[in-house]
Length: 72
Image (cartoon, rainbow, N blue to C red; front, side, top):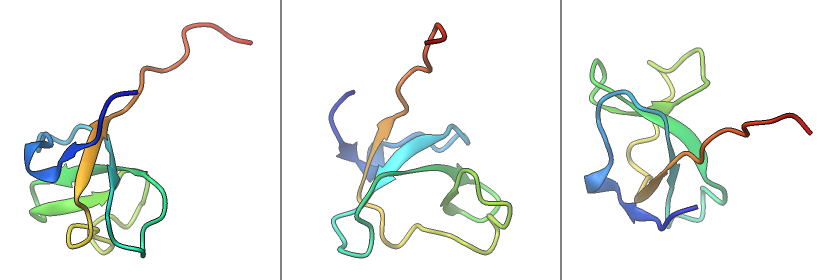
């Protein structure tokens, strides 16, 4: 995987990326996407994205790795 990048350089087109934070509240990277409707980052798999924003804590991002190409 690549290097962590500053959150200011993250795509804001709805693409799902990995986010993390320097805050002790977030210990692990998590998939998220930018919500233009809400103007903040939201969890990628949360059905209540409009309620559970994560914007105030994120500091870095990286692209998702490609999925596997074959079954094991």
